[in-house]
Amino acid sequence: MSQSAFIKLVQGSAVNELPLDELKEKLLHYREQTALTGTQLDWDYANAAFPYTIESKQDDRWFYLQGTNPGYKYIVFGNGAEGPSTIQVVLPDGSTHGDKAKANELCKYLAKQLLAELTMFNGRTIYYNPRK
Image (cartoon, rainbow, N blue to C red):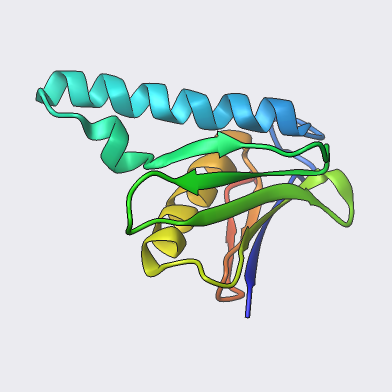
């Protein structure tokens, strides 16, 4: 059975909505940052930290990350039912444990960058947004 995590852009978040094109840019920025870390370490850290290629079909509502080695298969990103103010991250049937670990890592990274509310795959919520 597939599992989902949700990144909700709420009051106090860095942006009110995040189109999928900008989400792709944030993921590419993550890959660039890990590549710079790898340069400092003299190691190809970008391929270990982001072992995916970004693939999209004709549909503008979602895209997926395709694994580049056998330990990783798929992670799907799309807008949730609330529209561009919610990002849904789905681990489809057939995803590996490595996919779940990377999806958790990417969700935390994105939610922290966006100052958003993150509901993890296990149902727990992490608040990165400033709350009073």
